[in-house]
Length: 579
Image 1 (tube, rainbow, N blue to C red):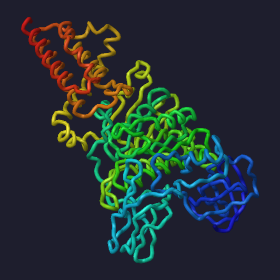
Image 2: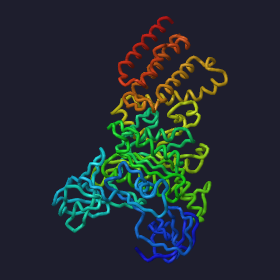
Image 3: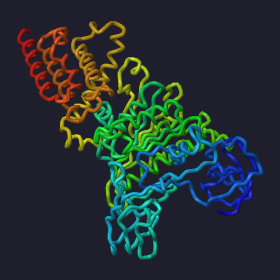
Image 4: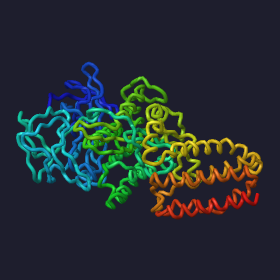
């Protein structure tokens, strides 16, 4: 600890101290209760600190001491299944200490320092190790936790390494220069963890959600935003992504959400079953809970805590998906702290550096070659809660400039019970070009043209709907009547998906391709029949197409789909013969 100072000024979570030496982002203890804070501005002798806890009751003249350390998280075995607050205090430990309400000045380590873990070394005496090298493994839940040399350790030759049962503080490896290594490492949250190389996003993150995988895919290591008004399904969509995406680790940050919403997440997530293992989804999840009634400074830190934990698992060679719900609340915390600092406000009172902070956060996503030579990724999916569903507000607009995928939730679709309520006309993905080869290779060479065809039909339908509302669908030319019907089939059969149905909750790419191809087959046969003189009423009354919606709910769908396609061919042949 360095020499202490005293409090001079208090403005909510932002306090000013004098008589203390400090660097930017040093962690300090404020007041007699030793509240945790962080240096955010140095102005001559005035050290300005944001406090991560409620400051009511503290007064000028109380002591301030500097720890000389940056805000850092503890990384090691025990992270998975944990539920933390914004500064990595485990909520289960805090509950045992003080009950349901967190008192001030209470600290708890991020990891359990007394628990023993079985360590199996993968290196032996005389081996060379460097920053990021894998020393050994610990079986944590159903995930193998790889123990790494910290990136800021130079490395060298292994002098000794031990196998057995150890706590995170016990020395497991000693290098020839005397450096001792444990299973735990600390890392400052505002500093991105280093990598060897960032790779191009050429592999999709498969989510099992047809509108996402089929029309607006996200790449592994990609960035996406889900803006939407209250009740449009952000939380269910994020739960579906957490449950079904082919990422091995999930980090969920509940950043400034209402207490009742966060309670729902905290009670539902432990109950969710991991479809890959049949065990609780929490076994590969880290939850960070920071509700709207918690101090705003801790909300601002929670996003950095989450992304640092995600990078740590990425460095082991895992694909990680990070859900931030919601970045709007994070931006509001920045706005409040900025106003306390009396900084010049930008648009709608947000700080002028809002775009820069959002960029710094999303840029920590990526598919990378780690220091150990493995491939890992962090995919960041940020929910945005624009006030009144107004997508023109600064947080949504700045987020859209940064992310490559935009999934626009629409309250009108949710009111019509169309779920997921993602508006296909407003959404987009900029990864389509870089993922094209993967879809050609892994799904079908036809897939990309099928996707383009479906989007074209949906856009045509949007143009025709204005005429339909004025004069009715019967007044449309015959070809357009068929277009309206095909678009309806794409919407109701392909885009609508039931998150609560055991089969339809997840749809793999082969099934998505088969469903889209069946709709395209109906479309081609319908236009051909219309050219042969068959009336639209006869084309729309084809019975076999009415069986297509049931395919979504059938696990072994191939025989059923083949029968529908044969029946469809036969019905259209009969119509053309009669014409």
